[in-house]
Length: 337
Image: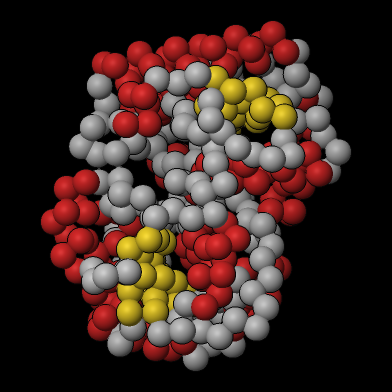
């Protein structure tokens, strides 16, 4: 449970804020339960004080400690005490924590699992939950099914629209998202240079040792920028030659890929997880077999020749927050009935 801010550190956090805004715009009375210090203008917030151990543990190698476990338990206990007292028609629950699933028992609730079955405690809680479960992609539905948990609904994420205007693509390739091995940050930098482009990394350092040893030595001045507001990131995407995602895990959704395409920027990615569902290969970008670095570099050149108006058109037809919110609206109405 970390603050929701205009410059979001993670895709799930960004989606929750966007979904809350869109449901509010559709006429629903939405209360967003979130960590103190959150900023989501236009949505009613119920802010919960959280201990510093929670946010600190999101940066490896801080890891999971007894202090963090206790802090998480306290924060969710306070949040769900308020939720139970609020007599809400329905609850859309997005916390990827066992406590968030267990404490919602007895509520009219839909749990969205934004990650795969990577945490044993969450797998146990999801398996024992009486409430329906949703995932953001078919890839995640299949992953959870293999773990013995049936997610009844595939509710895809979505992103806000963005008008890139007359943006002219530059000489840089964008690698956006948290800096950690599974995101393939270092491989993205090497691929950009191999394709004759300047790498631009935008994101927060999640794995400190990985950043020090594998990423920082590859970067020159001005090639690493901190997390930025969505409208600023959209502008950077619109002017990037390509957005690179040489991921080293099964991406649960890939919000960066969706944002890039909506901004008219082609995506080059390894075909893992949900990215084949998000990137329309040959139209919105290129998908490459996982681990094929030479093929990835070659695909960057091909992607640069794609029609950027068609990239944007494909993204807007498939990946916007409006249809995503409509699907959530229908699913939540079913839970509330």
